Length: 85
Image (cartoon, rainbow, N blue to C red; front, side):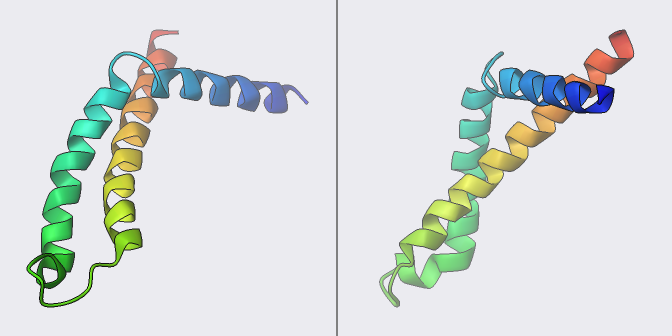
């Protein structure tokens, strides 16, 4: 039962890390740059008017780098916290 409480506290700490210390802003900047590049690569023909744009793919192409950047930052902060404890 102790590991269940530990898992809950880890999730709570991860959520707090994800919304603090400029993490959302940094993740947004990364998502805008990486998402734009990926959209140009993946839907370049649609963006140039040669095909129809798939708006779900556009949205997901920005969401994925945001999630990856946030995950990376949070996991780094959690590991750093473990080493300092």
